[in-house]
Image (tube, rainbow, N blue to C red):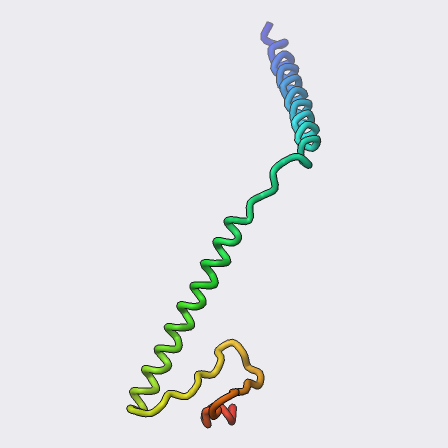
Length: 108
């Protein structure tokens, strides 16, 4: 009976594999039928991430501007702090009311 044992095992494995493939196909078929009726995914995680990123940028900009002012006041005590040049914008920029700082007029 020992020589026939591998045939039983392989037959058993092929049967299990066929059952698995068939049941997988059935699951896919059923889920494809009800897919249009499923509830849409929530935007809450995406909105939360966007809000967190926005406020992180606001806090980082405030800290950067404060450090800029403190550095300027160390070098020029008692003077008015000129506008800080935008960090991530290299193009021309205009000041509506006031003077453009002389250090920013001529860019090296």
